[in-house]
Amino acid sequence: MGDRSFRLSFSPQRHGSLECVNRKKQPVEKYERGTRSYTMSHIRGKDTKIEVLVRSYLFRKGLRFRKNDKRYPGHPDVVLPKYHAIVFVNGCFWHMHEGCSKHSMPKSNVEFWQAKLLRNHNRDIAQRAELEAAGWRVITVWECELTKAVRDERLVRLYEQIVEGDADSAE
Ligand SMILES: [Zn+2]
Image (cartoon, rainbow, N blue to C red):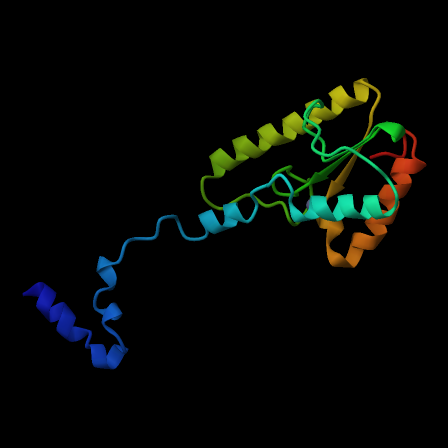
């Protein structure tokens, strides 16, 4: 009886389709609104767009390098033995870029994300120290430095950091 009156009160004619009536029977969303799509958009793949951007620029400039070299801590995106330089291309979210608008904590599962991102952050610091102790100059390029408006400038500076830079001018 209750069900029937519910149906009648949402007449298909008025609402265009039967979906409106059956709405409650649809499977619930598999993820909390916003959460999954937000997370997925930040998943760091092996060859994310920003890494490809940096590599192809350096290649065009005539530099030759190894990529994702698993022999080094953090599997650096770009390894240039000739210049003793290593480049990490970091997503601002995953690597907790401090003070960056692209790094904001997800609104749900805050503790989980805080712990996870902090782990990433601390690991970055440890890996950098390890590489520097082994004589590498470590340069970080951030995702937000590769937005269209500022990209060219950053890439030019990166090239200079690699070929001319000493330990001090590397970030
Ligand atoms: Zn950033």
